[in-house]
Length: 386
Image (tube, helix red, strand yellow):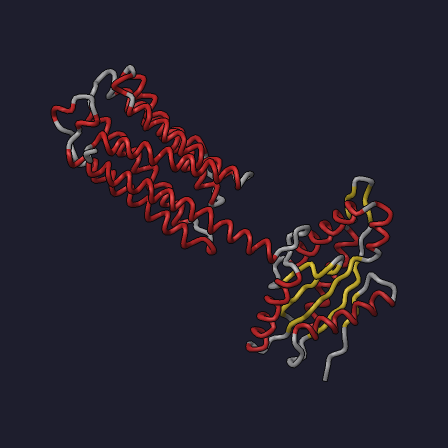
């Protein structure tokens, strides 16, 4: 089989079908991934477009060309939409649809009223440059810090596609090509060969984007409490130890606050465990609101206990504890059966410069035990170690 433009077209079609099939299989395994759904649909639309363009000799030319280009335009819009969603960026759909509409208008004008293969190729190239450049800009400007490697590699692939289409803008089609893109000439053939290779590179880039995102999500899930969204116990112990060493190097104080939801077992016994979960989520919301504006680490330490590490003086920690207690008193938990009063007992321990984090938490726990014994809904500070 000779490596001519028709052969490249067949190879491109087979590659598109293989990639779309592969992403469909990924979608079976990774159900519930909206980004993957958009990209899979985009790849199948691209495959449809290639099929329609390849069947022009056996189909009415105008419907085949219009249908093929429409499928490719829709593929590009879905790819762009999926990329914006992957990066968590809002993207008004009307902008992409407007661009696709302008592209289709150009294809129609130079297919029906003023037929010109050369101009249609230029219209397609401009559209591809704008779409691929848009995607690359999103990847470079809005890459999350934990996903920069995959975003930069994917951006490089899309920018390479931009370069190919810029080169194609300056390559006129052969004068005898007529309306047949397969006779557009050797220079155009080389750009199509590069396009096939970049299509394969884009496949790997998309898989890399998904893989790095899944790894980030898995790491976050391993550090996060599933109910409250706060750091879990192991994560706060690791991060807290680092923070303790940092404040000691800076010769700054560190407060450890251990908070416990008062009478939580009674809440579970009276209203059920689902209501107990709602109370914990409400308690979390109050803590996050009160701690906003402070440098802090906040975690669900276990059960109904929460740990708050606060770089600052004992006075600052006591003021924040007072704010938390008053906020809880003023904002009962809104359960389905009605509002439920929630209070907290709080133990406070200050860094003495010698004890490790586990020792500080143990001292805060002893202070918390005293707060409960003295009637709950109060703050008790541990004695400073000599």
